[in-house]
Length: 237
Image (cartoon, rainbow, N blue to C red; front, side, top):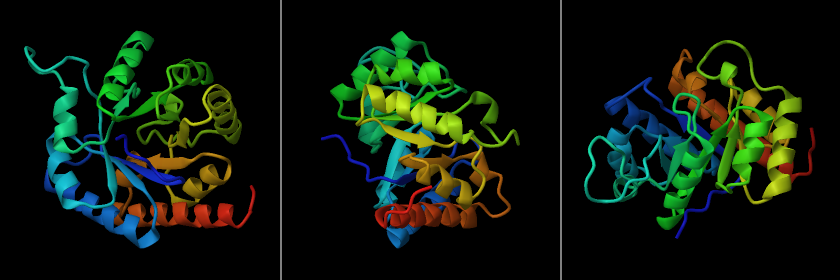
């Protein structure tokens, strides 16, 4: 059965900033924060670390950074969907700006993920791309302008972009979860995006390039908890 993620949740991207034991150290801390703040945390983990992160954490939703659509059998240097699921991943990221895909590729990957009851976390750049991908019905869409990704210092997505992409996606399939993550570097931005209607927020470079990445994970997950509590209390932004 496909994993359910409670909202608002927080997502951590590792990319290639860290590897090996450093990934596990971050995962263990994120797992502890997920329990401490009672917040669901998704973590996008390098293929080499998926199994041990899954085996040594209890509260994380672990995603693979990509997968191909081949089936068991012949093939070399491809990422087999069945293999990442067997390692413990509950989902997969597709169409990140550093691994872009065509719409036919996106559809084929979503179809393969559905066969295996895996969640699909799809990235989109423009409002038009978010709309086109929403028609394919992934589980999560992360709309983020490419120029804001990767610690460029160009800032975060504008609130007009946030609200427009949420509306475009929800008008097509209300059950698609919408996350905002572009350019986030602190907990206040996490809070602001969730209060603006995003069901999640996330960060990669904003954590990995922070002076204290472990402290930043705590700050951002705590901000997710604060937003969840304020929304439950009826506060609006």
